[in-house]
Length: 438
Image 1 (tube, rainbow, N blue to C red):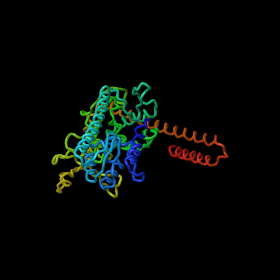
Image 2 (cartoon, rainbow, N blue to C red):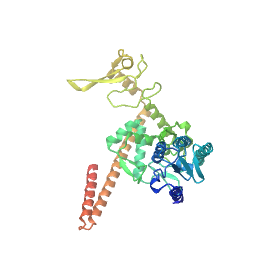
Image 3 (spheres, one colour):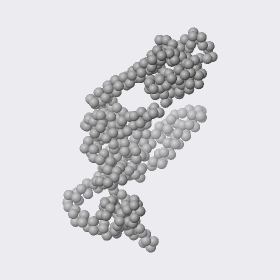
Image 4 (cartoon, rainbow, N blue to C red):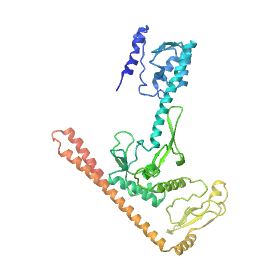
């Protein structure tokens, strides 16, 4: 690491001594080292300097160049204005400047503009090169769990079979349930864990019960469909210096190269999954949205349209106290009552309507439909087998951790009691995890 520039900045203390400032009146502000000068929101050192200049506590500011202080032209001119009022001098490696002098003020203003222009130009060149490489599909981007790079930077499926089966199970379950929330509930109900790696730190593989956002990220990530994508989000800097990210629609992606590498699903299925997720998210929008199936006895839940208001009818369940095992349900439209405060549009008995629709559906079933039903049943059976294998893999991994903890404890010198107690506690913790999983 080249620290020569850092040494030169600290040597400015000798320059201040040569100009006549005593040692006890020289303060070195180095809190902002390693931070970009593009914004002063996170730079506490610059904020403290500006406040002390405004309080007329600073006689001269020493810096190698303007860019060391600030690369934001607006912030730089604000500092110049405060220095002019408080009669504070500014020194760099080319000379000493007085903000009250017209020529010095113009020279420092031009330096501030050039400093910001230099930063913007460097950023533009870097982003331009990055985008050019991305358009060829050669920019190496972080991969989602289940995909890895080879020694030649080729993207392949993860060699770990348990990871591959877990990711495949997510897509198979969504193919059957057609809802990210239902997939999350199914995984949590079955106790199936998904792999993940932290974005920072050791990035060690960990298994945990998935969350809704995790399932959404897997279903929406085009890399799982073998597509190389770049520019899926738009970045904007806030006034406080933090960054705001917004997702872009697929037609606005900067780079989209289908079939760029192996994937878990085909590109056509990924596009269909996106349409399904977008339709499920449009809960309050009118149009061609088809809600996902729900639990309950009702056959036509979220499938009946009210002929009066044009909205979907809801299901209301009732049961008699003397017959709790025989619930009844009604289809009713609450749109006018909820939104306008008027009476319910209409309601009808659900068992009668479901029986009529069921009779019609059964009469329309043919051999192809029966074959499709058998295929769905086989797919469900396969999903359960994969879920069982995932549990077995998890138990085997825990058993391996228990065996490692036992070996570390047995190989330890018994006289080392402090280490022995720690290893014994670790062994017991691994045993409890294994017992809970079994």
